[in-house]
Image 1 (cartoon, rainbow, N blue to C red):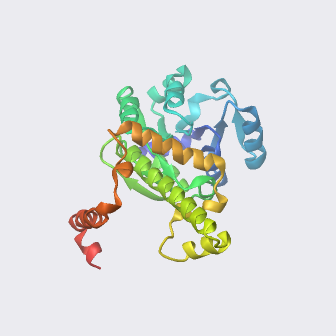
Image 2: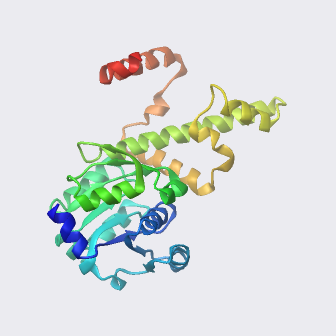
Image 3: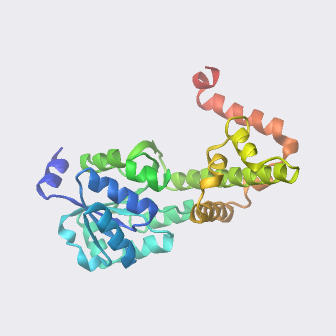
Length: 283
């Protein structure tokens, strides 16, 4: 409670670093909810576009921010190298050492996530990969995978503004691992849907009918069903995450999967679910 009161008296600001699809959407959602938000992006066009969309302030360098009032950052850049560059900035370091927090929503490998946190153990860093895309970010309907210190009242309120679902984890690296696994599964589903569509088309079946049948029947998947509307950037991000997972593990578990082992693999997965949540699997 004392932390929340202190934040309120200081008119706490939130800095969102990276105004791409996810970062720009999160920043817009916070501004819509009445937060004092400053967007930051090195791309001047993004800065102008976000300012026009939200009516809030955006800058293209850390020098344009009054860090004395910053209580939280959302880091939504593309790579772990960019995350490290943000955290190494003198202004950011001073703010973090003064008690500000940072939600890192950038997708990283588990080992990179642990390394980043280990380098700044005294800081309030949250590992928080997200899922849902730009539209859900703007609507406050994201899904988040989070680990870090217990959130303050102010941090908890920010999370409630942005996320429809939050899944907590005990160890750093676990949220990033599951994000990579989930997106690799999505990439596989998109690939399989594309193969299914092409195969049926080659046999003379209308592609539109194929797509409709798949969406309402057993071949349906959230990623595969979105095949027609996926942007090149979305597909590229799925591929990036699949490659990150492949680089983190000795080999991709999806590559090792064999149709000859379908029955045993599914049976083993059911066993894991039964052990984890017996009531749910019986219902």
